[in-house]
Amino acid sequence: MKMNILELHDRFCQEAEVIKNYRPSTIKYYQSAIHQFLKFSKLEWLEEITTEKLRDFLYNGRIERKWTAETFIFYHKSLRAFFKWCVGRDHISENPILSIELPRKEKKLPKRISKDQAQFLLEHAFNRKNTYRFEGYRNVAVLAVILYSGLRASETLNLKMSEVDLKNNILNVVSGKGAKDRVVPICLPLRRYLIDYLKDRDRLNRECISFFTSVRGDIPFTYNGLKKVVEVLRKETGIKFSAHRLRHTFATLMLEGGCDLFSLQKMMGHSDIKTTTIYLSTTVGHLQEQIRKHPLGF
Image (cartoon, rainbow, N blue to C red):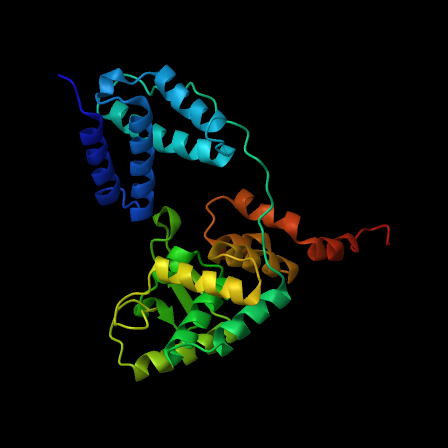
């Protein structure tokens, strides 16, 4: 009996979400990959999939659509996970994508903004003429969480009221990337921004369980809302940044300040310290300090 690819993929996604507790964004990545492949290949049944058809799809993306190595790897990884699931359910005997080699990943240094730019950004976000006073307090608090704690944008927006502990000065990041929990300390400047935000949130009698809420309603602040805030601030300040670039800025500034790699790894939520070491390449000031420790005594 033939098996419909989309029906199987729906079951794969349901299991990934319900059993493996994958994030909704990860499920969307999986769905996007399979839809793009089926649109290109015009296939419908699992039995029709071959290594050559997968290779045609991936090579077409790399050559004709000018995919980066990261995009190629994204599609390869997403499809590989689905076919691995199919093998585990005895729908196919072997994973047809395993013999397709991955391109060498381009080594790009994480982009950051300077310390002065970070400070100016926070000041501008707070002092600009907002339509609502609450908007200024919230926007600067969101940016401050990323700049002072290194949380991902999704982790920042997913914070619950119960997860921001100002008594013990910690952020409890629940189900971060890879469904891992971690604790990140709250420094004094961040604490001040959060207290100011909470005072204005209380003034508006917000009861939403999400820590960051919308300006016009007692509902969670969304990623699209954050995206619009970033676009406005980029235009007004002339600083080229994104929420993720602010996370990179946190990491490089922490290393320049003398933070050790192990501690930074824990705060960033990296499963492998190799991911954290890439920031060493961007901390020129820190490296210059270290070279002065050479035993020959420069």
